[in-house]
Amino acid sequence: MDDLVKAAKFITSAMVEGEAMEAFILSEREVAIRIYELEIESLTTAESSGVGIRVVRDGRTGISYAGTLDRDSIAKAIEEARDNSRFGTPDEFAGVAEPDGVEPPMMSSQWSHELLTTPMEKKIELARDLERLTRRFDKRIRSLNSSNYGESAFASAIINSNGIERYSEATYCWAYAHALAGEGDESQSGFGMSAAKNFAEIDIEFAANEAASKATRMLGARKPNSMRTMVIFEPEVSRSFTSIVAGTLSAERVQKGRSLFANRIGEGVASTKLTLVDDPTDERFFSAVPIDDEGLASRRNVMIENGELKGYFYDSYTGRKAGVRSTGSGNRGGIAGSSAPGPRGCYFEPGTTSREALIESVDSAILIQSISGVHSGVNPISGDFSVGAEGVVISKGELGEPIKEFTISSTIQKMLGDIHEVASDLTFRLGSAAGMTLAIQDVSVSGN
Image 1: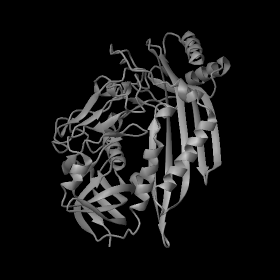
Image 2: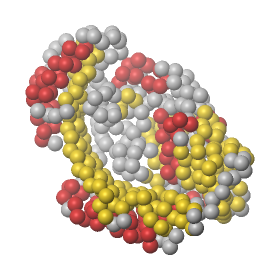
Image 3: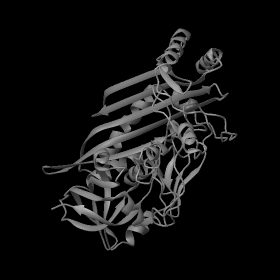
Image 4: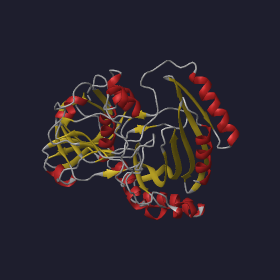
């Protein structure tokens, strides 16, 4: 963090009247361990730091960045951003974030010294133990594609010429396994993961059981007949669905005419059973931080409430364009780009029904274990939704035969309206969305 503070002070000293300047400073450290047959297949550690500079002069924006935090590199990036701004297209809404009077929330420390000081040997052994546990789950587990451990630590600073200067830091780690189960010539795979904010809290038994059970329960899977039926998304699948829905609520997409929810504030867009919240202050999220990537305070935003669309995600630019305040939803992919509005901790508010009770209450449905082709099969403009899937048939409240190689299709609009039940098992994984068991009626299944 000391290097970030020094860089911030140097950048502040370079700011001049007559221009708006913003700097996003980032320092990261990552570890990735891959185990195969109890041997280290790969082990990598990487550290990086850098700064992205954005300068706005007379409505023209220039961007540059440096891959180090030394003064000469930062000074060069500042001058390049200033020079680039000369060639930018004038935009009356261009600028940097302004303080809005909202203070960042008080959050417990997101930084784990214990994680960073745990010996590498213990992290390697944890990945090996994950492989051992997964293999022991069932004699039909033949091997693992891999057993993996990873960790990430980052510190960031956002400063600008409007007086914003804020810092954040976080650590988290994870372990996951890809199990291969087999009978005869057949082979099926399953994925399991556990993530935590410090090393001691990783639950490799959970990850092993999840990977092995998903692999073994798919043995004997067949291709189903085509039909229309209820589908029940497992938490990992509903997490993807939640991300898709939340992503369509970006004000940037709305303003460019690329969202199916444009101009629908105040309308019913989903079942009254559904409330969509984005709350990056919820410390159960691994993405939880007290500030967004423009330095504004993180805050809880209700996007859909009891089926009614309440608003969009705004950063400072899209907020100025719409004549509203930022929702503290600025996101960056790294130091090289600008902010864009989007979700940072989204979930459907859970119901009161347990996963087990939900399944038991269903006469006929398909439990969707995994989906594929999301990026090519989902259109956020039209709402078309068509993805490959695999899962298990539910009959009279009991899990039955596994099925594979089928497609589920509908539209996002219809799926939101056809939500039958939101279960209580809110589940947090890496990323900016949480999932739970989610039942959706009348979905088209294309098989034989």
